[in-house]
Image (cartoon, rainbow, N blue to C red; front, side):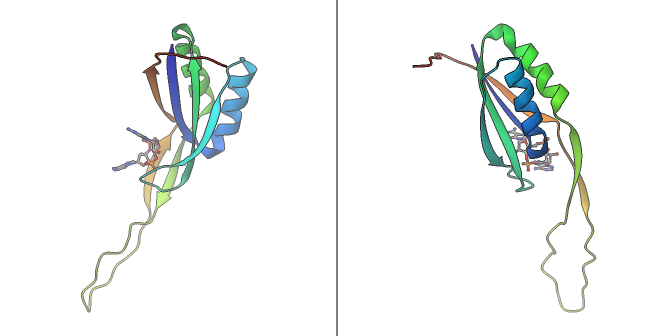
Length: 109
Ligand code: 2BA
């Protein structure tokens, strides 16, 4: 058995969960935030049999898009007479960051 953690963009989470539920996967969604962009994303957690891992990876890939986000770098500490020209930096985010961990036990009690 494997425990899959998929960190996905908030905009993709609903479609992904709907697609997983449609294939009868049970999932838990946790609202999370990335450490770099500090923006909200979603972590989808599911326990599956080993043979189901590849199907779940395909469903994640089919439902999660890569997007470009812009960030504005913080202005540096300025000396008098210096000036800072702010410019946005493009960052490519996602489709999804997925971890598959070996699962020792899995019960629904
Ligand atoms: P964030 O940490 O907010 O990162 C968003 C995007 O910013 C990343 O997209 C990557 O393109 C860029 N980025 C992150 N750290 C960077 C750095 N130190 N220098 C330059 N660019 C950086 P993704 O790689 O697609 O990651 C999307 C989200 O997945 C991340 O949001 C984070 O929440 C999670 N994640 C990614 N890798 C992870 C890891 N190894 N462990 C835990 N969470 C991870």
